[in-house]
Image (tube, rainbow, N blue to C red; front, side, top):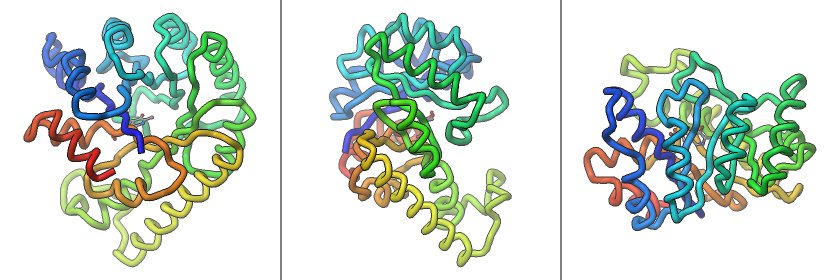
Length: 259
Ligand code: PXP
């Protein structure tokens, strides 16, 4: 199982003060030394964490492959085409959201924009991936477009897991939509895991490579890592959060050991 580290959370900390520290560039050597396989960053339209110059320097300086998550905004696609990371993962983007809330919609008019962006990037020899919800329809849409990878959104799984197995429901960040009894949460969690497994199977039948990510952490990652057919996980928040207490290298090694 390959591990990509979303280092944009380091830039989030920098932007909290709008200064030049901590610098995500400093993470590159540590991530590599700790045995991770990929650097992942999200160049958001509002540049709330990673900026263009970060993305450019990271692609130039990283010895690991770099995966840039981005929307289909034409200006952003042009920047990605120019920077030429190893892979571009197209994600939905909504300015109001705290983080990427769901997978891409592959219905029209989105389909045509995504299709155009994927082919533009592929022509520049950039691997392409779509961040999709774990549904059979999304996998079929990705196959029709002809991407190299799909990344399955594990956010719903992670939310259900947190409401069932942690104290999140007792905090001010509880997820009100999931304020359900434990029997119901268990049932939904099982269903969500099955949806992910079915999506992986469908993607494999189509010859798509499969990654997964969002909300994965040291508690909930095992069930996902056990799904044969998932080749890569992209994990950020939980690893950067742990690194505050253990240092980044240790936090990545701990995750690698679980995988
Ligand atoms: N994969 C994709 C496509 C994402 O958008 C994100 C969030 O930036 C992640 C993985 C990592 O999510 P998290 O930070 O919750 O681990």
